[in-house]
Structure formats: C-alpha cells, structure tokens
Image 1 (tube, rainbow, N blue to C red):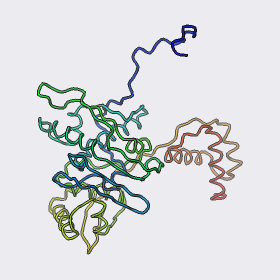
Image 2 (image 1 turned 90 degrees about the vertical axis):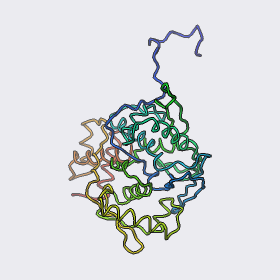
Image 3 (image 1 turned 45 degrees about the horizontal axis):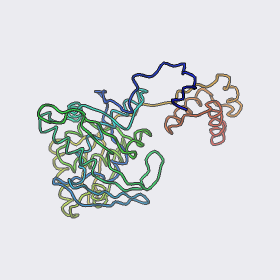
Image 4 (image 1 turned 60 degrees about the vertical axis):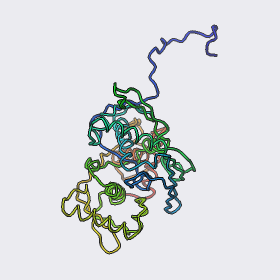
Length: 347
C-alpha cells in the first residue's frame, strides 16, 4: 500500500522531475502530413463565411455527421493546426520518440511551418481556429487504427493558452487531440502532402488536392464524377455552381500551374487528376526486433528452396506495414515462412 510506513523503501531514488503526459513540438523540418480519414471525408468546411449547417456524408457502410458550434464548423484553414500537430508527432515516432496526444507548441512555429504571416492578427486567427476545432462535433463509425465504433467527439478535446504577451495575443498553446486523430497517428494512417498545399488560397483547391492526394497518390491519373466530388468536398453549392467553381480552379491552374502534385481537368461530368510525378516515394520501414540466428535452420525446413534472409526481410517489412510487434519474434517469423511457402511453393 502506498504510504504504508512498513513498506520497504524502493531501491530507486524518487523521480523528482516527472515528465508530464505532454509532447513538445520542436521538430522544425517535419514533413507535412495529414490523416487519411480527414482527407477522405468532408470533415472541414470550405465555405468562406461561418458555416452553421450540420452535414452528413455516407460512403458505403461508413458515415460521418459534422455539427458546428456557435462559431461555425472548423474550416480547411483551421485544419492546418491539426496537420502541424500530426506532422510533428509522426516525425517524432519515426525518430523513436515517445509521443502523447497532448502537444505543446509555440504559435510562431506553427505559423512559419504552415506559411502564414506572423503579424498580430495571425495569433488571434489561431485562437479562433482552435475554438472552432474544439467546438466542431463529429459523430461517425469510420475506422481509425482498425477500430470501428460509434463515437462522438470534437476534433480536439481541449486547447489552452500557456502564455500571452503584453498585448494579450496567443503565444504558446497546449492542444489535446481527439482519440480519433491520435489513433490515426499511432497507426501511421497518414500521407505526406506538398508544402505548397499551405499556399493554396481557395478552400476548394485545398479540398480537391486532399482528395486527389488520397485517391490518386502516385498513380498516373484518377477520375471522379462531379457530383461525387461535390459531396466529398462538403460543398453546399448547387451542382451547376459547383461545376463552375471547379472549372475556375482548373482554368487558374492552366494559367499558373500552381496546383500541387496533380493537373486537374474537366472531362464531361468527370474531374480527372493527372500526376506530375512529384509525390515523394515513402521511406521503407521495417520491424527491427531481434531473432535468434539458430532459427534460420528451422526456416529452411518450413520453406525449402527459399532464401531465408530474403524471407526475413519480407517478414520485417510486413510487420512494419501492419504495425505488428511480435511477442515471440522467432515463432512469428517461422509462421510467416510457413505461410509464404504454402501460398507460393518452391521458387
């Protein structure tokens, strides 16, 4: 029992400087990354004025309902705060650091990372964005990290000011992400996006880019019907008006060539995205757990004819891709070799 004087003294000195359940955003060159669920579904408003409409989007068995607060729905520009936090946490995970869903960052670091002006009004806009992120309510059954469950939550659980300057402007903040977002981070259900995403002026351009990045990826081209694109963008415009707005985005890109990673075009009632070849290749990740060298003999027996070192590499890649950390790596590797041989036979 804690505090019982009869309890033997711990052999460890007391932890006088316990680390809080907090991650400090301090990675200044983190590649911008966005969560796949947020890219797939119309979570964020693309309206230029405060959006107070509740919306529901269904795609197969997945559904999502987004409800605004008194300040309206969170916008695609508010989303930059989440992208900044996601980018920092993924970079830290890739570096082997421990992360938390509560993060602390300097507003100026966020502004610089997302290409925003650093004037006084920018700090107030960040505060408004945090309020909308906290106030926007999500109900969904969409899976993140292989978990399907009905849930209702805000995009962030909480946000608070750590310090203000003499003028009262927001300087340092602490944000607690929702489990929905944090689950996606831990499962690395994210995609790297172009830094030019933050330079896109029009909300519709940003949303079109997110959808193209999610679905087209590094493919040569991908197309989507105008009406389905309208629904995925969360647009409240009529079909006719939406087609005009998309045409404007396409015409602007023909003139300036500014749309990141893809060239959008309108072909009949379809929007076609053609890749520019600029989407970065993912860095291959592998599971690095140790296996006993003696296990290779058994691997040769269960997968005769196969190079057991090659199979080990494939096993490590598969473990990393599936986010698996085997409790008994030796047995897990042998089972992988057996399954490999059963599916493919001798080479």
